[in-house]
Every structure is written in structure tokens, then in C-alpha cells.
Amino acid sequence: MSQKNVEIVRAALDAFIRGDVDASLAHFSDEAEFFAPPDVTGSGRVWHGREGVSQGVGDFVSSWADFHYEDRELVASGDEVLVEGWQRGRGKGSGIEVSESIYSVWTVRGEYVVRLRIFRERSLALEAAGLSE
Image (cartoon, rainbow, N blue to C red):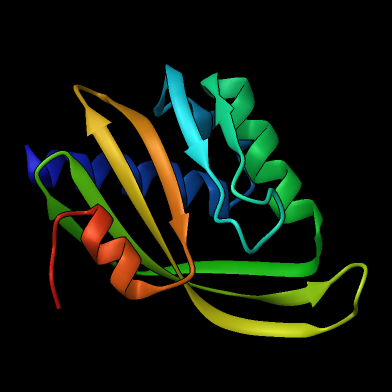
């Protein structure tokens, strides 16, 4: 099942990267949850359902000018998939340029993503995914 979970997450990410929000959201459960980290847009807030995931991710992306994201590594761990990504852009309000690693842990049950958590620190993401260095 772990490889299937990686494929589901990759399909959702690929759709997001190409800007196809509907195709990305199709991989999420109706009851999905999106957790933003406390130190970025969203301030640790939790969004619920596909609409909530869309709103939460949209709020995050809309805070950037010239936002770019790429996934670098996907690692399966049971129901969890750890994604190491790279994001870069410029804050719309601050104008500050950012280029950094970002981590997410996707929980997949059956055919759908049921939870997406974002982390700025690798160690926290590894712990959330049940992995170690």
C-alpha cells in the first residue's frame, strides 16, 4: 500500500504544480484536513474538507509573489507519505525573497488523502511520519 500512497500524493502534487486545483483536490477525501504550520500564513490553523484544503493552500500561495514549488523526495511510511519540497518566491507584503526546504506529511487512507500537515523543520516532519534520520 505504501507505493500506492506515494502515487496518490505524487498525482495530487503534480496537479497542484501545474495549477490544476480541481485535479489536485480530487485526491483528497471529503473530510480531509489541512494543517498549516504556526509560523507561516495560516498561523497553525486547520481547514476541513476539500473546500477547506483549497482555501488553506490558496491562502498560503496567495501570500507570495512569483511562488514556485517542486517536490524533491517522497518517502512512504505506512499511511504517511513524507514529502521534502523546495519553495521559492517573494512575500507580497514584505517583498522579501525566500528560497527554502519545506516538508509535508500526507496521510492516505484507501484512495484519498485524509490529512496534510506542513512543517518548516525536517525533524518535526520525520517525527510526524513515524520516521527517523
